[in-house]
Amino acid sequence: MSATTVTYQCPNCGAGLMFDPEKQVFKCEFCLSEFTESELEQTDAHQNAVNAQAQADEFCGHMNTYMCPSCGAEVIADENTAADFCYYCHNPIVLSGRLTGEIQPTKIIPFKYDKEAAKEKFLAFAKKKWFVPKDFTYPEQIEKISGVYFPFWVTDVDTDSQINARGIKVRTWTSGNYHYTEESIFSVFRRGNIHFEDIVNSALTDVDKKMVEGVLPYPPEAHQDFSMAYLSGFTAKKRNIEREALTDSVRERIDRYSETLLKSTAPGYTSLNVTDRNVQVKKSHWDYSLMPIWILTYKNKKGKVYTYAMNGHTGKVYGELPISKWKLTLGAIIASLLLAPIIALIIAGVAIL
Ligand SMILES: [Zn+2]
Ligand SMILES: [Zn+2]
Image: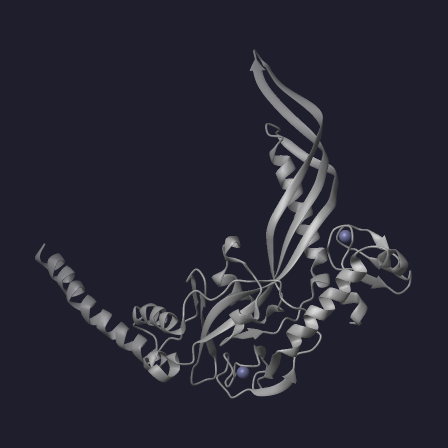
């Protein structure tokens, strides 16, 4: 990706612009506008791009990147925070240099629970599960719990949306020997200004998708303006999805939501089929935001990794649990011992009858 594609924002709606080399224009795939380089220079877009670049350089200048040689996980941490082991596989990680080419987050949800509180919550969660292996809750294992900020794109959009639809109302009745069916066809038109708030997308490819979705949502009001201070003592997962890559999917979502919302304002039809839909994006705002997760992974003897994660703001837990076969067998034996006398009693009862 060349530098120009990431820096310009659409003067019309605020989404990221993509350069089309064939037509030599910058395209907004979100509101469907096109701009030439000289058109952009006449707007604030050029100055905004320069400012964003300066902020990004400042941010990158204070951030180190770390890479795990065993599993490939990449995290970033501020220069005062030593990241020594991989939150995922617990192996030592290596410093791979200064962060480059990353834009600065605009928002962050700070951690609300400290490590001690996170450990306590984990223990309370794990202790109720009698079938987990003993070493799952060893102190040296729990000590590995890590506070990691995960990157997200959060989008607000204002649209002017409209639909044309064909509505059908069917009425049936019987009179004497005749059965009547009346079908009335309506041309339905709906139009409205719709504001979409906080459309959240992970800025990471699928690796931790299930886990991340498991601890969502974060309350929108928990967002703070980004400050480096919040990162101190924590690592952050390095983003690998740019917002330009998300415009299509966000666009699709707002098209779909618009249609559903507008359709819901036209009740009473037996069927309502949309024949034409037009969603115009008037304005959009994209925040690159970091959200907090406490993570503890456990590797069983066969090397399978189990992830326990806790939303660092709400405390919502996502947990995959390892099962101790030994404990499970023991549990089955105890259960069968408890059941055996009951079965014996029932048989005895039958015999007495
Ligand atoms: Zn646009
Ligand atoms: Zn690792």
